[in-house]
Length: 317
Image 1 (cartoon, one colour):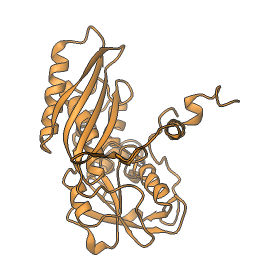
Image 2: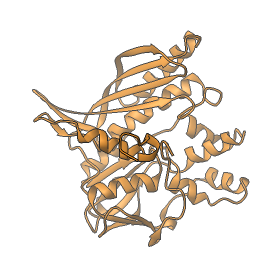
Image 3: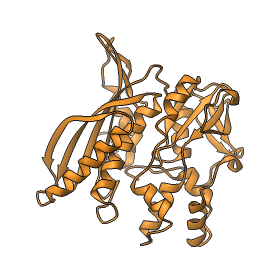
């Protein structure tokens, strides 16, 4: 099959991104381009970090599962988290909003009010955007922020420790519950509807000397793999080092004795952070060491072996 006949599903999300970015130019103002949680751009009077994310109805949220306020909070959190993952703090966001013509106006107003409320938790605000019609609700957001020392995915060094901040597995457990028609455990369902990223952890990690960092949006193993490949290292994590939320264990048992660790290692959208540090002594409060950086070429192992479970979400799969 020629490249002109190849589908997006065949090349995959990251293959498509690689092909697209091959033709993108650069300039003295682009300090860090595509390939990280956010780009780092220079201006005449300083620099900023910027990132774009999209939420599509039926793929990222369902209106029968989540209220307009839930969706607004989640849309903001997903984008604020990208700035957080660079060690920065968001200051302004824009939103492109598309929806069916028969969507009630009140739905849009409640969604945007909740979006603004989530932004306000870090001192950011919605400053503009665009509106269009579509067959389903689509919310595309661009977040802009400040990062005194941007932390990329590419700086991990052999001998660094691997640590995470925030909660892992709750959103994935909540999705599993909702998918089966459950509305409990409530803490897990709520975490899927309204994730709570550790917004203070990114800047604290940067200030404490983090060498590389990424947020967990697709899955812990998958996202840590992006960091490992960007840094050209291997990473090993210890399963017993992770904190398993009680609700995750409860749901795993209720679903027929599933391994609760699968939600922690393969689940995304908690928007926790995972980072590498020169030593465990450098960790700020709220970070938990779970592994170490080794010689390698982008592989992530669990207890010294390749992870046999699902490492995380894949678009177009």
